[in-house]
Image 1: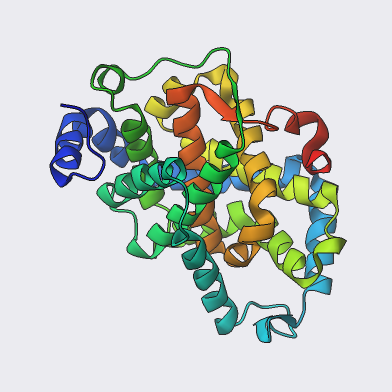
Image 2: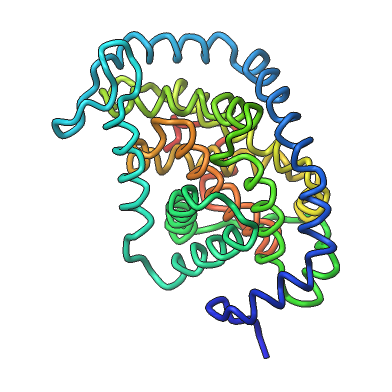
Length: 310
């Protein structure tokens, strides 16, 4: 009998089957993951498009004071996101998460959602992760291209046909150590890896026409790179993707972020919800690459055209 994503019994069996090969090894290194990502994100912000990032951030800080959306002040006169802005971010993600979508897109969201819950990701992050999965599913639905070669599947994933579940659970365990966690290192990591995108999202809401292709592309690239460095610390995921495909996965994540920002910008104005939405995007695309060997059309051109090619 095949795996039924809506059956609790099926998920319980999956959890038992891959606990020793996926969950426990990832859990053992989760603290190392978040500590390493802080260092990686700091290094990244100093080495990739340093001038462009600083310029974009400066512009965002100076032009996004007292931002109002539909009569709601989401950023105050000092440039700080308000309590109303925090709620606005949550509401935006919830609206996306509860949208009625095609059966195919809903399947992406259901698999990702169930895996995150099984991995004990913070409850506050679940709807935002689902929003990211649905956004990604909609992009994939517009067309995909085949990747010539990927890594090797972990034996248990391939033999039991648990690929998407195994990938999603492995990532979920890592994200459980990061999303909405109270530990200072987790909070610092969340802020660091999302900083370029949160600044750009606020600027986009303030005046989308002022966000140039370079600024948008750089913010998406930095965010994608930070998250890929995080998941690359998980041996099972690294093996399933293959070292040669690290960059094309990064490009696909950046492309999807840029492709969906017009809809998701409101959910990305604060680090916590931004990180959770991005986690949904990262999980869905990583499973897509590892298990289906495809990525969204337009992603492979991102390296040369960036946001200018959208």
